[in-house]
Image 1 (spheres, rainbow, N blue to C red):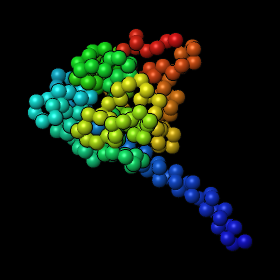
Image 2 (image 1 turned 45 degrees about the vertical axis):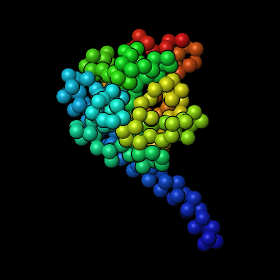
Image 3 (image 1 turned 60 degrees about the vertical axis):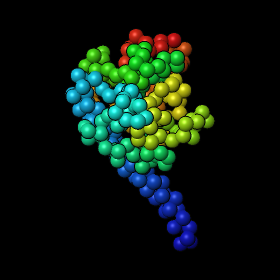
Length: 221
């Protein structure tokens, strides 16, 4: 009888404890993302109001480029902030909103849909709705079937940017079915998948509106 009661109590308490533990991880992830976005805005304040590029060519380093996380180190974006306790692989668990329109992935291409892209970035003040345009989100599942480049680590090009339409469908929503995201005005949210992917078009497809800096390019059908 006692064993049965213990088993019942364990069945009640263990899920609650697991949720509490994940809530703590979500809070830490939220704070890390907020600090990273603040560092991006501080960078912008020192670079003619432009956000850091997702990746930009540079002659200062042997590899020939700097990723967004390297660019913001002088502005408080230390590497410890790149970690989220709910992610198990790699050492950089956030990536920049660079592009979700396949065929536009080219250095300095202004047709990239995001705000911190390959050799290209924007001024938040020029956006029609900076409070509704994503800047950073948590990284995708590195075990995705087409993720041939491996895990994401600080200073590496691979996994530094959300760079293809397919990337949108393998975000994990690890924090109690929510994803930690920051926006171009600096605020951070924990959003459910329907919020992050929506709104839906009349045909029933997801529009991913918040990933487009230009409202005119958001799919409507």
